[in-house]
Length: 178
Image (cartoon, rainbow, N blue to C red):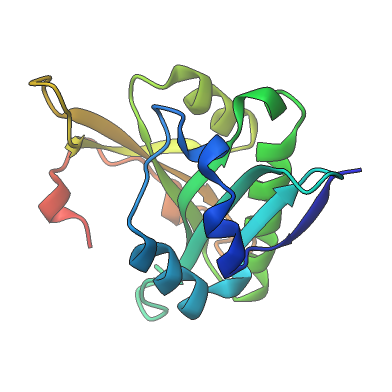
């Protein structure tokens, strides 16, 4: 049976099977440790009965309460290829949304590559919608052009009027994101 538990420092040495996916953004060890120290409740791992890591979600709470922008943010969500299509990503997203609800968030947001239609469709099935397009958000390698991202959002119960998910009519640049 799969267990969902808090991510630990030891997991940093066991999650290569998840992070080797070309669509998974990977970061340096200090970045993961920063999230673990500041937002441990937003860093959750799915573990197989034998101890193998199946997937994880890493996020944070950010924004302004006064401007009704306090929200949960999904920094990374990834499931190892051999454990996909089991509902793990949906369960991890549900957990992050529940944490964001308890913290009084207005919405949950995430960034996803425009080309990653499998992920875009999954997020839409989970109730997310495209709030805006961010031009050249993802840096490319091998001389390819940078790639655009969708900023996708899902309103939480605190946003009774769903103002946080009204789409912007024009794309923005990464430096325009608060």
